[in-house]
Image (tube, rainbow over all chains, first blue to last red):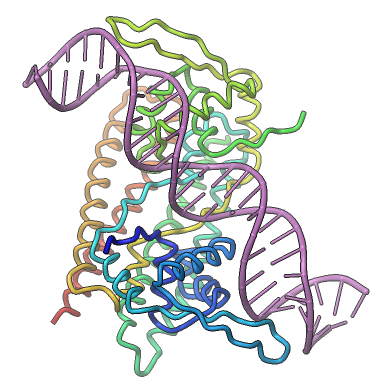
Length: 186
Length: 186
DNA sequence: CGCCGCATGTAAGAGGTTACATGATTCG
DNA sequence: CGAATCATGTAACCTCTTACATGCGGCG
């Protein structure tokens, strides 16, 4: 059987369904919650991808009537073929990430920027880094406080420490950049 | 006059042309050279975008005969309207970047990974970080050694220090992650 | 009354990649 | 001889976003 090409979105979905059956809406919530610091998905992409995975028999559906007047839910479960596809994905190395940092592009072209604009951007960036750092520190604390952590807590901790170390460094860089840019405006 | 929506690729092009006239090929070389640690572009996107910018009168073309049997070049220059569009871009805040880190997705779903795969990925990642760091250190040294640096060297230094601090942190994280994952495989 | 949360979806289009085609020269 | 460099471009395709549509119930 030829291995059907599966894109990163489909794998994120497949990975979450491997844990437990979920609806498209649930998947979005999960991504916004636990995966937010390194991943994102939109509804407009999740729903079509769920249909595609179903056509490829990597997942199956079950309609569940909504409780208390809530709309009907479609709960998806991963199939045996889906688990095989997930394993196959891990086996080939990840696609090299191609960077695209708009803030750095602006800085690089800073000569053409009207006064004040770069400082505004760098500060907004720094604020985002600080905010993200704070949120992750809370997650870190919650993970550490768990008396009997699940087997995969190690993996979650690794993604969290990636985030905290990254954001800490970038928050510091932002402050340095802010100082440098202020010196220029004199 | 309604501001024509311009995408990040068009702005990278516009920004480079603001410095001096260039061909599509030159632009690609420049991106691969000085912008590589925070930006990328493909030929298949640069050429159509040059045509679009030209239709919008933000840049103009001049055909230059190739020297020594080389093919003809199309050298593009930024127009006055192009410079205005560039300024307008700086004036509105950058689009919030949405993260997508495939390595972290794999780690998060690490429970489903066949043994060895995650360690392989983390090591490859660390090697990339070390490589990028080394290359940027050279750039840093060259910038520092310049006896009379251009006015915008400050901006370049900021993008470079972003890179060095980032890669240093991520290289360290990779080694930590490697140790953690090795402990798991016992 | 209007908005929010729940829940699913579609259509249009933007943005971008990949693979290919062309053709001359230079280099090993 | 084959490969790489220079140089431009197109066509097919994939991925993903945005905006919209629908509909019920609870809350302020």
